[in-house]
Amino acid sequence: MNSRSSVASNSLSNFSLIESSPNTSARLRRLKIQEDILTAAANKILLNCESEERENADLKNYVSKVKRSYSEIKTLFQDIKTLTGDQDNLKNTDIDDIKKDILELEAKVTNFKNFLRRELTVLRVAEKELIQQINDNPQEIKSGLVKAQTKPYSELVPSPVRVLIHSPLKSVEVQRFQEFLKTTKRFGGWNEYNHNSFVSVWNKYYKQDNNLHTPYKDDATYLRFSNEVCQKIFGIKPDEIWSHTQWYLEYVHLKSCQEEALSKWKDNKRKIKYSKQKKVENTEEKSKTREQRVQVKFR
Image (cartoon, rainbow, N blue to C red; front, side):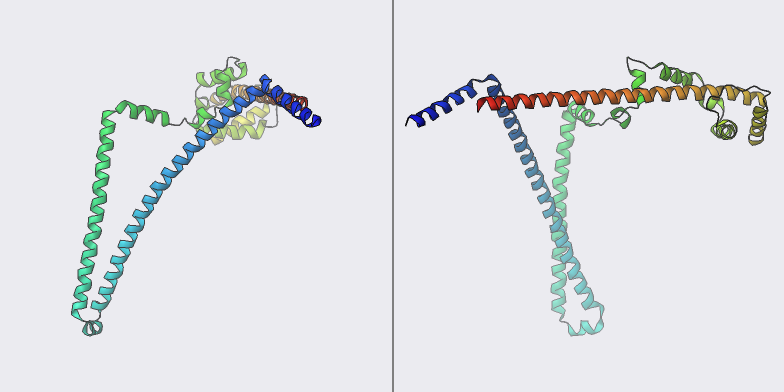
Protein backbone atom coordinates (compact mmCIF):
# COMPACT_ATOMS: atom_id res chain seq x y z
CA MET A 1 0.00 0.00 0.00
CA ASN A 2 2.79 2.39 0.87
CA SER A 3 4.50 1.75 -2.47
CA ARG A 4 1.24 2.31 -4.37
CA SER A 5 0.54 5.52 -2.52
CA SER A 6 4.08 6.74 -3.18
CA VAL A 7 3.72 5.98 -6.93
CA ALA A 8 0.38 7.76 -7.04
CA SER A 9 1.77 10.75 -5.20
CA ASN A 10 4.76 10.87 -7.58
CA SER A 11 2.52 10.72 -10.66
CA LEU A 12 0.28 13.43 -9.26
CA SER A 13 3.26 15.61 -8.51
CA ASN A 14 4.60 15.08 -12.04
CA PHE A 15 1.20 15.93 -13.51
CA SER A 16 1.01 19.07 -11.42
CA LEU A 17 4.50 20.01 -12.60
CA ILE A 18 3.45 19.56 -16.22
CA GLU A 19 0.34 21.65 -15.74
CA SER A 20 2.22 24.30 -13.83
CA SER A 21 4.94 24.55 -16.49
CA PRO A 22 4.20 27.69 -18.54
CA ASN A 23 5.96 26.35 -21.64
CA THR A 24 3.90 23.17 -21.65
CA SER A 25 0.58 24.93 -21.12
CA ALA A 26 1.38 27.49 -23.82
CA ARG A 27 2.32 24.69 -26.20
CA LEU A 28 -0.94 22.90 -25.45
CA ARG A 29 -2.91 26.07 -26.14
CA ARG A 30 -1.12 26.56 -29.44
CA LEU A 31 -1.82 22.96 -30.42
CA LYS A 32 -5.49 23.43 -29.55
CA ILE A 33 -5.69 26.57 -31.71
CA GLN A 34 -3.97 24.79 -34.59
CA GLU A 35 -6.35 21.87 -34.22
CA ASP A 36 -9.37 24.18 -34.41
CA ILE A 37 -7.97 25.92 -37.49
CA LEU A 38 -7.25 22.63 -39.24
CA THR A 39 -10.70 21.29 -38.37
CA ALA A 40 -12.40 24.39 -39.76
CA ALA A 41 -10.33 24.24 -42.94
CA ALA A 42 -11.09 20.54 -43.40
CA ASN A 43 -14.83 21.12 -42.93
CA LYS A 44 -14.76 23.95 -45.46
CA ILE A 45 -12.95 21.78 -48.00
CA LEU A 46 -15.44 18.96 -47.46
CA LEU A 47 -18.38 21.31 -48.01
CA ASN A 48 -16.84 22.64 -51.21
CA CYS A 49 -16.18 19.12 -52.43
CA GLU A 50 -19.76 18.07 -51.69
CA SER A 51 -21.18 21.06 -53.56
CA GLU A 52 -18.89 20.40 -56.52
CA GLU A 53 -19.90 16.74 -56.50
CA ARG A 54 -23.57 17.71 -56.52
CA GLU A 55 -23.01 20.09 -59.44
CA ASN A 56 -21.05 17.46 -61.32
CA ALA A 57 -23.75 14.87 -60.63
CA ASP A 58 -26.46 17.21 -61.97
CA LEU A 59 -24.42 17.88 -65.08
CA LYS A 60 -23.77 14.17 -65.63
CA ASN A 61 -27.47 13.38 -65.25
CA TYR A 62 -28.37 16.10 -67.73
CA VAL A 63 -25.82 14.92 -70.30
CA SER A 64 -26.80 11.27 -69.91
CA LYS A 65 -30.48 12.15 -70.32
CA VAL A 66 -29.81 14.11 -73.50
CA LYS A 67 -27.66 11.32 -74.91
CA ARG A 68 -30.23 8.68 -74.04
CA SER A 69 -33.08 10.62 -75.66
CA TYR A 70 -31.05 11.31 -78.77
CA SER A 71 -30.01 7.66 -79.02
CA GLU A 72 -33.62 6.48 -78.76
CA ILE A 73 -34.75 8.92 -81.45
CA LYS A 74 -31.89 7.96 -83.74
CA THR A 75 -32.49 4.22 -83.31
CA LEU A 76 -36.21 4.52 -83.98
CA PHE A 77 -35.59 6.69 -87.03
CA GLN A 78 -33.11 4.16 -88.42
CA ASP A 79 -35.65 1.37 -87.93
CA ILE A 80 -38.34 3.30 -89.79
CA LYS A 81 -35.89 4.19 -92.54
CA THR A 82 -34.89 0.55 -92.93
CA LEU A 83 -38.50 -0.61 -93.16
CA THR A 84 -39.63 2.04 -95.62
CA GLY A 85 -36.47 2.15 -97.70
CA ASP A 86 -36.86 -1.31 -99.19
CA GLN A 87 -39.92 -2.28 -101.24
CA ASP A 88 -39.78 -5.93 -100.16
CA ASN A 89 -39.68 -5.03 -96.47
CA LEU A 90 -42.47 -2.53 -96.99
CA LYS A 91 -44.71 -5.19 -98.58
CA ASN A 92 -44.14 -7.63 -95.71
CA THR A 93 -44.67 -5.03 -92.96
CA ASP A 94 -48.00 -3.99 -91.53
CA ILE A 95 -48.71 -0.36 -92.32
CA ASP A 96 -50.20 0.14 -88.86
CA ASP A 97 -46.91 -0.82 -87.26
CA ILE A 98 -45.10 1.75 -89.38
CA LYS A 99 -47.65 4.40 -88.44
CA LYS A 100 -47.25 3.47 -84.79
CA ASP A 101 -43.47 3.81 -85.02
CA ILE A 102 -43.77 7.15 -86.80
CA LEU A 103 -46.15 8.48 -84.15
CA GLU A 104 -43.80 7.26 -81.43
CA LEU A 105 -40.89 8.97 -83.17
CA GLU A 106 -42.86 12.18 -83.44
CA ALA A 107 -43.75 12.01 -79.74
CA LYS A 108 -40.11 11.42 -78.75
CA VAL A 109 -38.94 14.34 -80.89
CA THR A 110 -41.62 16.57 -79.37
CA ASN A 111 -40.68 15.54 -75.82
CA PHE A 112 -37.00 16.11 -76.56
CA LYS A 113 -37.70 19.58 -77.96
CA ASN A 114 -39.83 20.45 -74.93
CA PHE A 115 -37.09 19.27 -72.60
CA LEU A 116 -34.50 21.43 -74.34
CA ARG A 117 -36.92 24.37 -74.35
CA ARG A 118 -37.42 24.06 -70.59
CA GLU A 119 -33.67 23.92 -69.99
CA LEU A 120 -33.14 26.99 -72.16
CA THR A 121 -35.84 28.83 -70.23
CA VAL A 122 -34.12 28.02 -66.94
CA LEU A 123 -30.80 29.23 -68.34
CA ARG A 124 -32.37 32.47 -69.59
CA VAL A 125 -33.86 33.15 -66.16
CA ALA A 126 -30.48 32.51 -64.52
CA GLU A 127 -28.83 34.79 -67.07
CA LYS A 128 -31.28 37.60 -66.31
CA GLU A 129 -30.64 37.21 -62.58
CA LEU A 130 -26.89 37.43 -63.11
CA ILE A 131 -27.24 40.50 -65.32
CA GLN A 132 -29.46 42.11 -62.69
CA GLN A 133 -26.90 41.37 -59.97
CA ILE A 134 -24.14 42.87 -62.10
CA ASN A 135 -26.20 46.00 -62.76
CA ASP A 136 -27.11 46.36 -59.09
CA ASN A 137 -23.55 45.90 -57.78
CA PRO A 138 -21.13 46.93 -60.54
CA GLN A 139 -18.42 48.02 -58.10
CA GLU A 140 -18.34 44.68 -56.29
CA ILE A 141 -18.10 42.79 -59.56
CA LYS A 142 -15.34 45.07 -60.79
CA SER A 143 -13.37 44.77 -57.55
CA GLY A 144 -13.75 41.00 -57.67
CA LEU A 145 -12.38 40.92 -61.19
CA VAL A 146 -9.46 43.12 -60.20
CA LYS A 147 -8.63 40.83 -57.29
CA ALA A 148 -8.86 37.77 -59.49
CA GLN A 149 -6.42 39.12 -62.06
CA THR A 150 -3.08 37.40 -61.88
CA LYS A 151 0.15 39.29 -62.12
CA PRO A 152 2.31 38.76 -65.17
CA TYR A 153 5.34 36.51 -64.98
CA SER A 154 7.71 39.48 -65.11
CA GLU A 155 6.21 40.81 -61.85
CA LEU A 156 6.01 37.45 -60.11
CA VAL A 157 9.56 36.52 -61.07
CA PRO A 158 11.39 39.81 -61.71
CA SER A 159 14.68 39.77 -63.55
CA PRO A 160 17.88 40.42 -61.58
CA VAL A 161 18.46 43.56 -63.65
CA ARG A 162 15.09 45.04 -62.63
CA VAL A 163 15.72 44.09 -59.00
CA LEU A 164 19.09 45.82 -58.98
CA ILE A 165 17.72 48.91 -60.73
CA HIS A 166 14.98 49.43 -58.12
CA SER A 167 17.08 48.24 -55.19
CA PRO A 168 18.27 50.82 -52.64
CA LEU A 169 21.73 49.26 -53.02
CA LYS A 170 22.02 50.22 -56.67
CA SER A 171 24.69 48.62 -58.80
CA VAL A 172 26.79 51.18 -60.66
CA GLU A 173 27.54 48.76 -63.50
CA VAL A 174 23.87 47.99 -64.09
CA GLN A 175 22.96 51.67 -63.94
CA ARG A 176 25.63 52.59 -66.48
CA PHE A 177 24.56 49.95 -68.96
CA GLN A 178 20.86 50.83 -68.63
CA GLU A 179 21.59 54.53 -69.07
CA PHE A 180 23.70 53.72 -72.13
CA LEU A 181 20.79 51.80 -73.66
CA LYS A 182 18.42 54.69 -72.95
CA THR A 183 20.64 57.41 -74.40
CA THR A 184 21.73 55.53 -77.55
CA LYS A 185 19.57 54.12 -80.29
CA ARG A 186 18.85 50.44 -80.69
CA PHE A 187 21.65 48.64 -82.57
CA GLY A 188 23.63 51.87 -82.49
CA GLY A 189 21.29 53.50 -84.99
CA TRP A 190 21.71 50.73 -87.56
CA ASN A 191 19.01 48.31 -88.59
CA GLU A 192 19.12 44.83 -87.14
CA TYR A 193 20.32 43.10 -90.30
CA ASN A 194 23.28 45.45 -90.83
CA HIS A 195 24.21 45.30 -87.16
CA ASN A 196 24.17 41.50 -87.17
CA SER A 197 26.35 41.51 -90.28
CA PHE A 198 28.77 43.87 -88.52
CA VAL A 199 28.90 41.61 -85.43
CA SER A 200 29.46 38.53 -87.59
CA VAL A 201 32.49 40.10 -89.28
CA TRP A 202 33.70 41.53 -85.97
CA ASN A 203 33.70 38.11 -84.33
CA LYS A 204 35.67 36.78 -87.25
CA TYR A 205 38.53 39.24 -86.62
CA TYR A 206 38.36 40.15 -82.92
CA LYS A 207 36.43 37.46 -81.05
CA GLN A 208 39.56 35.86 -79.57
CA ASP A 209 40.78 39.16 -78.08
CA ASN A 210 39.27 39.34 -74.57
CA ASN A 211 41.01 42.58 -73.56
CA LEU A 212 40.15 44.50 -76.69
CA HIS A 213 40.41 48.28 -76.80
CA THR A 214 39.42 50.61 -79.61
CA PRO A 215 41.61 49.67 -82.59
CA TYR A 216 43.50 52.21 -84.66
CA LYS A 217 42.00 53.28 -87.95
CA ASP A 218 45.16 52.45 -89.86
CA ASP A 219 45.63 49.07 -88.18
CA ALA A 220 45.96 46.30 -90.76
CA THR A 221 43.44 44.02 -89.02
CA TYR A 222 40.92 46.82 -88.70
CA LEU A 223 41.33 47.79 -92.35
CA ARG A 224 40.62 44.21 -93.45
CA PHE A 225 37.64 44.13 -91.10
CA SER A 226 36.31 47.45 -92.44
CA ASN A 227 36.70 46.36 -96.06
CA GLU A 228 34.77 43.14 -95.45
CA VAL A 229 31.96 45.06 -93.72
CA CYS A 230 31.78 47.39 -96.74
CA GLN A 231 31.43 44.35 -98.99
CA LYS A 232 28.65 42.83 -96.86
CA ILE A 233 26.63 46.01 -96.29
CA PHE A 234 25.79 47.94 -99.44
CA GLY A 235 26.33 51.69 -99.36
CA ILE A 236 28.07 51.80 -95.98
CA LYS A 237 30.96 54.24 -95.50
CA PRO A 238 34.21 53.65 -93.55
CA ASP A 239 33.43 56.55 -91.20
CA GLU A 240 30.08 54.98 -90.35
CA ILE A 241 31.82 51.67 -89.63
CA TRP A 242 34.31 53.45 -87.37
CA SER A 243 31.52 55.22 -85.46
CA HIS A 244 29.60 51.96 -85.05
CA THR A 245 32.78 50.22 -83.89
CA GLN A 246 33.19 52.73 -81.07
CA TRP A 247 29.54 52.32 -80.08
CA TYR A 248 29.77 48.53 -80.18
CA LEU A 249 32.92 48.41 -78.05
CA GLU A 250 31.26 50.61 -75.43
CA TYR A 251 28.18 48.40 -75.56
CA VAL A 252 30.19 45.19 -75.11
CA HIS A 253 32.24 46.68 -72.26
CA LEU A 254 29.24 47.93 -70.29
CA LYS A 255 27.30 44.73 -70.88
CA SER A 256 30.24 42.67 -69.64
CA CYS A 257 30.45 44.80 -66.50
CA GLN A 258 26.73 44.34 -65.88
CA GLU A 259 26.98 40.57 -66.28
CA GLU A 260 29.86 40.48 -63.81
CA ALA A 261 27.87 42.57 -61.33
CA LEU A 262 24.86 40.29 -61.71
CA SER A 263 27.03 37.25 -61.14
CA LYS A 264 28.39 38.74 -57.91
CA TRP A 265 24.88 39.70 -56.82
CA LYS A 266 23.63 36.15 -57.38
CA ASP A 267 26.57 34.71 -55.44
CA ASN A 268 25.94 37.05 -52.52
CA LYS A 269 22.24 36.26 -52.60
CA ARG A 270 23.04 32.55 -52.54
CA LYS A 271 25.37 33.03 -49.57
CA ILE A 272 22.76 35.05 -47.66
CA LYS A 273 20.14 32.40 -48.34
CA TYR A 274 22.51 29.67 -47.16
CA SER A 275 23.31 31.56 -43.95
CA LYS A 276 19.60 32.09 -43.26
CA GLN A 277 18.94 28.39 -43.74
CA LYS A 278 21.76 27.59 -41.34
CA LYS A 279 20.30 29.94 -38.74
CA VAL A 280 16.89 28.32 -39.09
CA GLU A 281 18.40 24.86 -38.78
CA ASN A 282 20.37 25.89 -35.70
CA THR A 283 17.26 27.41 -34.14
CA GLU A 284 15.25 24.26 -34.81
CA GLU A 285 18.05 22.12 -33.40
CA LYS A 286 18.18 24.23 -30.24
CA SER A 287 14.41 24.05 -29.81
CA LYS A 288 14.48 20.26 -30.21
CA THR A 289 17.26 19.99 -27.64
CA ARG A 290 15.31 22.21 -25.26
CA GLU A 291 12.18 20.09 -25.68
CA GLN A 292 14.14 16.91 -25.06
CA ARG A 293 15.55 18.39 -21.86
CA VAL A 294 12.07 19.35 -20.72
CA GLN A 295 10.77 15.86 -21.45
CA VAL A 296 13.66 14.29 -19.54
CA LYS A 297 13.04 16.65 -16.66
CA PHE A 298 9.36 15.66 -16.40
CA ARG A 299 10.00 11.92 -16.52
